[in-house]
Amino acid sequence: MPVSFTDLTSLQSNQLVESMVEPEYRAKQLRKWVYHSMALSFDEMTDLPLPFRERLKNEVRLHSLEPVQSLTGKDGTLKVLFKLINDNTIESALMFYGEDRGVERRTVCVSTQVGCAVSCPFCATGQQGFERNLTPGEIIDQVLYFARYLREKDDRNGSPQKKKAEHISNIVFMGMGEPLANYDNLWQAIEMLNSPEGFGLGARNMVISTAGLVPQIKRLAGEKLQVGLAVSLHAAENELRNKLVPLNKKYPLEELIPACREYSRSTGRRLSFEYILFNGINDSITQARALAVLLNGLKCHVNLIPANTTDNPSFQPPPGRIILAFENELKRLGINVTLRERRGQDIDAGCGQLRSRFLKDPGNSPGKSAIKGKV
Ligand code: SF4
Image (cartoon, rainbow, N blue to C red; front, top):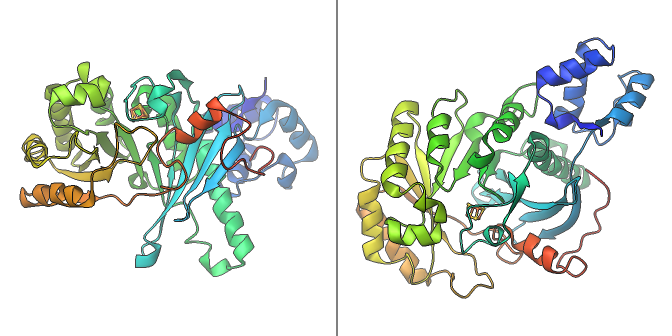
């Protein structure tokens, strides 16, 4: 079985090259081709000797994802369903923010597991059950896919002066799965995505989202890289949160919030709390006040996210006036709050929706793409 190049740390790729009796600088060349040039094949690596390239073709896999479907939303959001080497599927998305305001952000939403064991009832991924953790390379390859997509979009547009702007600016680990339940693989991927020898993206431009794994939040507080942390809260009292985020039964708010306070104190970083607003469930003024009390004095920011309009009638977004009232109440109580722009509403925006449709009917899902081959 060939090894995936993006599964390797720098040290491991040095050792691989050494095992092939090549000088160590060849490993640097390889990393440059993979992470900077985003090569699609070993044939492109023309500064490597031909016999070495032939050996690499037999023993090393360059990419671990095969795009099988893609959908593009009216707002430009691109959602892709990938098949993995063992035929599991995952989905990822590229979202564009702020182009109208001159602050251009291109954010990749990355999956870290196949399925998810947390089983949030409103989430399509949560209904699929847990299959396995993604490897570091499968996490990294999602980013490289979209980076390559942006580069090719530039080439198609023929606008070399825009090349810099068309790079990925942010990565959020908010796709399928609970990222902190796959801590070691996630962290290896983050180190390579951050490394100047790897993808070279600033740690502050990456955010890990968690449903509230308290021991891993404590572990994250000790890491040197300044990656952001977002906690999916969705309720400010245990009874409701036990239903919306079942992990709360294991790590209730009286453990989660002190861990967040400790994280903020020891790192000096501001946390984000994600709060999806569901009509008639967690959107009252009383609940806004309870949220403000819970987060009182914590260096944080609340992202309010109106629920996606999914097929599930139990979890619909509130009317606009209710959303506005909730937001205004938090502001009045001194909480930093942003109403998140909804992206990809017309293309199964919710995490896991595209995969759910594919699992139900692989031959007849929307957006069956013409994309071919591993990229
Ligand atoms: S919302 Fe996140 S944590 Fe909850 S089931 Fe979905 S992927 Fe898992």
